[in-house]
Amino acid sequence: MRLRRKIVTIAVSVTSGLGLAACGQQAVVHLTAAQSVRSAFTSAFDKTTTQITVTAEGLPGQAAIADHSVSVVLTTSKQAGSTSIDDQAVDLSINFQTAYLLDLRSVQGSEYFRVNLKYIEGIVGPSAMGASSTLGELAQRPGFGFIHDVLAGNWVGVSTSTLAALGHELSPQLPSAYSSISSISGLQNASGISSSVIDSWVQSVRTLLSVHQVKTGEYSLSLPLRSFAKSILDSLAAPLAKYSSEPFLSPSQLSKTMGEIPANLSLHANLWVTGGSVSKLQILIPNSTGSIVIAISHPAASVQVPTDATMLTEGDLTTIFGTVSGPLSKALGSKSGGLLSTL
Image (cartoon, rainbow, N blue to C red):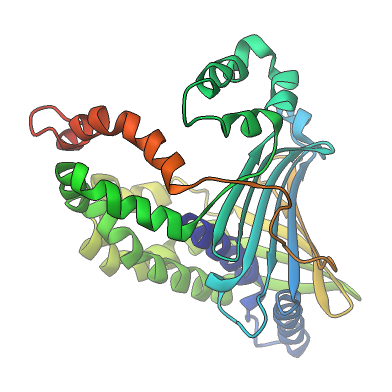
């Protein structure tokens, strides 16, 4: 659930952050363009179901194989009577051409996934992948029959209540591991800085992003990268000092990193508005012919519970984790060379 929320929060924040720009107040036309873009972004995320499709085009060299072929599709559907991101049904799919490679879905208190192993092996070759044969052997073991569904590309799911029950059952078996995990400051502090990052992102974009109307329904955007990075880091200096002591996040190191960004380097993008709502955003990759294209649409069908999904039970999960609980506890909880003791 936390991973799903982070994905949605980051995707929506980054995309809608561009729409919060308001700059160039000396010119009325410039201000109107920024307001129109902000309104169009607000409208884009006001619908019941929103789908964001990310693709690439014009990539150089061997990366060109991904042009219009690889796509990442994020679909969110609001639950009736709810305005919280946490209550949205979410589907995240990674696709190649017309086939899905990996699909993750969270809806109505359960998490689901499916993997197209046969298609992936068809791309990279069975010898390079080797997953099907390994999983096929594992599926023969008691309690691992659901792996047949994974191999077949079927949906496999688990409810959050089942996961919670499993955690309650396993926690006494792994006390030292849980104690070690809870002592890692990075895990505890990660959530503390996230809101500061989002606020800084939005404010920096709002201040520095230039918006110009090219013609009806089409806008050009420009963001100076060094000034943008400096603006964010200046506002994050205090939170970073409070939550982290990592050397690469020290003020001197961050200042050095910012200095490596060319002063005249800007991020340029083109944006299209259809029916008062953002429909497409093209982000041009600096010093390249390539670009990232983000299409925003609103399908009539909402994200639903997968049909015929195989649901894992607490017994299934206990079997899976029970087989590794001994080695896992030793690896995570050892005070003399265990995995966590070295962190």
